[in-house]
Each structure stands twice: as C-alpha cells, then as structure tokens.
Image 1 (cartoon, rainbow, N blue to C red):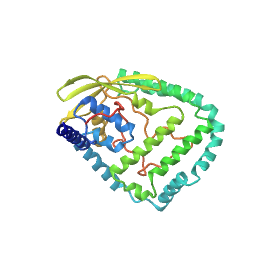
Image 2 (image 1 turned 90 degrees about the vertical axis):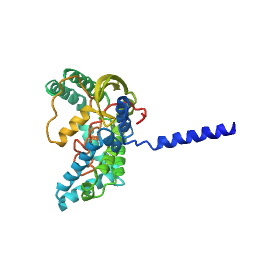
Image 3 (image 1 turned 180 degrees about the vertical axis):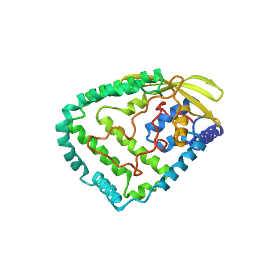
Image 4 (image 1 turned 120 degrees about the vertical axis):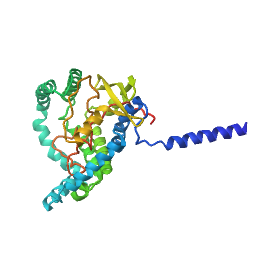
Length: 334
C-alpha cells in the first residue's frame, strides 16, 4: 500500500511538471481551445501572450521584424519633442497628478456634462449609417455591429459620464496606469522592443478596462460570459461559434479558424495582419462574419480631457495592438 501511494505521488508530480512545461505562448491544437485562449489572454491583459498565440510563429517573427524596422526609421526626437513627452509623463505621474487632473476636468464636466447624453444620441445615427455603408462588412456583420453599437450607446447615455465622483475614481485609475508604465524619456520609449511594447499595451488595456468599470461597463463580466463551441471542422479549416454578453445584449458570431503546423488560429486575424504587413487592404468578406467585434482596448475609456501618452511614443500599429478577439475566459489547455 505504501508503495502504491508513493507511485501515485510520483505520477501526480510528473503530471504537474508536464503541465508547467506547456508553453503558454503557443496556440492550441484544438480550434475551440485556441479561440478560448485568445480571450484568456485579453482577460489577463497579457498582450505578450496574445501576440504570440494569435498568429503562427513565422508571422509573429515578421511582426517583430516590422516593428524593429519601423523603430529604426524614426528620427531621433528633437529637444522640443523630448521635453513635451517628459512634461506629459510628469503631468500624469506627479504625486499630485490626481488632484491637478481633476481640477482641470471639473469645469469641463460642469459645462458640458449635461450635454453628453444628447451628444451621444446624435453621434449614434451617423455611426449606424457608416456601418450600413461599409462595403467590407457582410449583412450579418452589420447586424452584429449595430447590436453592439445600440448596447454601448444605451450604456453611455445612462452611465453618468458627467458624475464628478466617478471622474475622480477614473482619474485615479488613469494616473495609476501611467505610473505603472514606468516611462521616462521619449528616446527610451522609441527603443522599446516589440515584446516590451506588448507588455505596455497590456498595462494600458488593464487600466482602460478598470476605468470603464467605474462607469458600469464591466469588461471582466463580458469576457467571462464568452462561450465557444465547434460548429464544423474539415482538414485545416474549422468554424467555431462564439457567444457572449455585452452590456446584457447577447452576441453570437461564427469565427473561422485555420490550422498551421498543427495549431489553430483565427483566419481573420491572420488575413488582416498579413494585409497590414504587406500594406494592402484586406479583401472584403464574402461569407458570414469570421470574428466577433473588437472588445474595449487601450484606446477606449480615458476620462474626458485626458490623453495618456502612448507607450512607444506613437499610437500602436495595427499589428502591434490588434483588436481583442473573443473566446472563453476560462483557462484552456494548449
């Protein structure tokens, strides 16, 4: 009996060691798990992992090489640019940054706050029209995009974006995020590696999501609601059905997956990133939608009147900070 117990312990230890050696930066060998893992990475603000598992290794290498080339092309910042960047960082990270930023924002909220709901309602019409007129979207994609737009507009009109106490909370998160970036000089920012930039993007995404939560937009809840089921699989192609709730509005979409070297990836992500790297527009879809709408990312949710500096000195490129794909927030095996 003692020997059996020891064997069982040894077996469990080997299983644990095996699990620890699984490379989390490799896409899964099952299409459902691969789609789930994309959302796991977003849920954990792990953009470094996301950048690895959303594309095959050879395409990741091209993304990284493109990043280096673009960084090398940038001219050395002028003294004026360096000073502007340093002043901006200091503004957002100073010990009294929260108080000063709120003092700047408070009169704007008082003046324009009551007009926010009407302004949002006015913008929703043109936005819906632009969705209808987008030739790259299929009928199903347009319907899905407008459903998301409706949910977001309803949230924005009732989220009390003018509330000063909420603004204080959001600014606190904003300043904390700026400090967590540990940026000092523009020269340093422009020399960041692709991997470092992805880690910074994860920090920014986490901060923006916390700020949205202040106003009742719980992106954790949205990501946790995601479910993925296999719809079909044939050879190196598969379709998974992704469902999730955004602000209590149910969204369902079919997501095409493609297998490369035994691992599965979003066909749309690969197509869009390859198109971006080749500087050619992606071909309009001819079938049903292949990916859910972009989820909130670093560019969303900043408090009015604020502009956090980009971690690399410039706005993230499409390949550097892709839109967050959907999946299941529960951890999936690779």
